Length: 244
Image 1 (tube, one colour):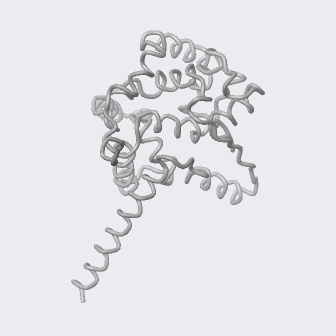
Image 2 (cartoon, rainbow, N blue to C red; image 1 turned 90 degrees about the vertical axis):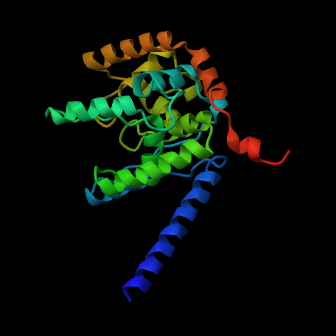
Image 3 (tube, one colour; image 1 turned 180 degrees about the horizontal axis):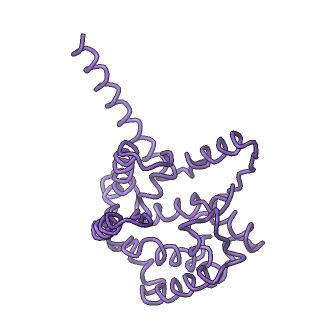
């Protein structure tokens, strides 16, 4: 009986793994209609008896400003063009910092954040982390870097019920995402560590300093030259595999 149950569990696990592969592959081309984090925030608002309206409008890569792309990379994941989903040095530094006590420091790459926001729930359990590793690997394997950043910018949380660059630009600055200035883009990137408590449109001194640092990092990373590396640094093996 135990072996039969084990076989069924293994079969179920294999089916779930296959379904996750197909889902990630589909989202390589199809804009995600929503994210697990959006569902979680909506349910939380119902439970708190303070329902929120979710704001999100998809903007394709060509309509997302380069300054915002670079600001997010500069603030969140400067090795984005180089790694395959995990920044090992940053993880080791975060572990060393957290072992010393005090505030917890994260080391999630943009790829990890996409995997978590799209497919998973909040929390720090080992189970969630393990599933996050699986989805991060799939995202890195099946999507080009540009797609990862495109989905991130259209899915990341920028306030209560505010998701994605277009909704964030409208909410904080009353403009469309394509019209964000470099300073506005850096302000949006500066609040990402705590977007529900910090405001890009009413920045504190800390946020203003962080935004200034982000603009400096954008210049040092090379701006548009860095974005070009997202195309050239890694071959798109999936596209090469497709029949001509």
